[in-house]
Structure formats: C-alpha cells, structure tokens
Image (tube, helix red, strand yellow):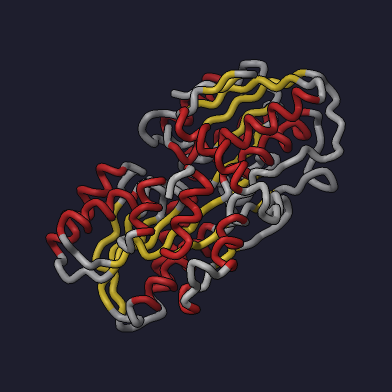
Length: 375
C-alpha cells in the first residue's frame, strides 16, 4: 500500500529524480494545456518519416506531459483539507499521478493552505478490495473521497450509496464510474475507447490491413482497459483480412502478460500483432517477443521506461502516453472545490479530460530524456 501525507510521499527516488530532470528539460518547450476542459488525442505521424532533426517529434513529445502547472484563481474556504484517494493497483503509473498531486499540494501550501491525503491501493488489482477500502473509510472525516474505479459494475453502486449518505465523492485517473453514477466529478482520460481504436488503427496500417492479432486487456472490469479493448475489437472488425485469435486478461501484471504472450505465440507462431491495453502488458509482451525471436508488432499504452526502450529499439511500434502529471494536479485542485461544496459548472467541469499522445520510434529517445533523464 501507498500512503501520501503533507510533506511526505512514498514514491521511488528514481521517478522523483526523473521529474526533476524532466522539469529542466521541458522548461524551454512550449507549455501544453493542463487538459482541463479539453478532449484531445495527439498523434505523431509515423508515415512522414520524421527525422531526428525535425522539431515536430520533439514538440509532440514535450506537449505530451505538462509539468508546468499553476493553481487557478479560486480561493479555498478553509486552510486545511483532508482527502482519501484509492486506485486500482500499486504501480508506477499511479506514482506519476501522485507527483502531480504533490505539486498541487506544494502550491496550496505556498498559499497557506495545508492539504493532507491518503493514497491507497492493493498490490494486486481487485474490485472487492477497493469496495472493502471504501466501506472502511466512509465513516472517517475526509473532505472528499476520490476513486479510480476498479470495476464499474461493482464500485458504482457503492459510490452512489456514499453520495446518498452525504459523502463528497469524485473519480479520477483513467477509469470513471458507470454512466449515471452520482459521483460529483471525474478528472482523467475520457477517451479510452478512442485510444484503443487509434492504437489498433496504427497497427492495422503497419500490417497492411491483414493478419492475426491478439489483445491483452488488463484487469477484468476496469473501465479504461475494457474500453480500449472494445475500441481495438471494433477497429479490427472493419477489416475483413484481420482476425483476433486471442483476448486475454493479464491483470495489469508484467509477468502475467509475459506468460500469456508466450502461450499465444506458441499457439499462433505466425501472430502478426499484439494490442496492449495498459502500461504493464507492453513490457511483458515485448519481453516474450524478444525472447522468442518473433517479429510480432506490438502497440500499447503509456510511459514505462522499459517499454520506451523497446519502442526505441523497434520492438514496440507505438505507445499512447497519458498525461498522468496533469491528472494528479487537476484532481487535487478540483477536490478542494468539491470539498467547499461547489458543484460542476463555472469552477470546474463534471469531466475534466486529459490528453493522450501516440508516440513512435523516432519519439522514444526524447520521451526517455523528458521523463527519466535517460536516452
């Protein structure tokens, strides 16, 4: 489990150092929008043959993750707030979200406003674990409870009951609750279906719109993973010469994704492509493809350092990178407004959309430098 509190945070030193390095490397680049109120998927064009000297690649990467945030002009009603956030699984993706939260926390502290919060998740994804955590904290005196929904069918009714009992509940990260849920607002990725479709379209084009593909989904019931898989399946269905030979759930585990990919490759040695729907499975799939010597083309999600090296080496074809830092920053800022009794409207929207940027091999070295000080 992870716990975050004022002035403390259990995140990896390497990731924290990476953000410090990235802030320096990004300082001369044009600042991207914080994502609030926007819905955007940015795609770099692999077909143009963007060269290392072409500034388009660097501009696309530098705009993919925005570290340059300032609080808006809203004046909080209190000088101390206490929040609880629970998310799917202890994983570097949510560490990156936490860094954005910590940035907002520091900026509030500069204004004399103290924010404390717990940031908790299980070691393995589980909707029942998340439900148990929510039931345990519902009677504690938190100003807002934020949830990255592990399974919309299991968790949404729990959120409805909490809201009905007077608890202020928001959702965040990459997974909102079910449509019609009474949660107050959501900050995160609202276009997961489109992300899955965009990555799959890139794969189809790469393969000449023919071949056998497999899908590694992630956690069963997780809205973001399921939506990306639906986008992938619907895209494949458009092309008569493309076939899905396997759809597997790796539970957001690199090791499970590796094992599943090895099995799929054994069952289908002529597999042409793999569509990966979370941050873990591109790494597991790439390890298996490399080990077996397969030329299967991989597309997937997010900014794992190992995955970016596979992208740089051409083992992974493209990755859809979400702006986790902005998700964290905007989540904390909106939580303050919700705690003060504000409803979606002029101060914040019911859904705050954050961007996804699809990057290719020519972008990998720049992204590694930006996020990890590593190229």
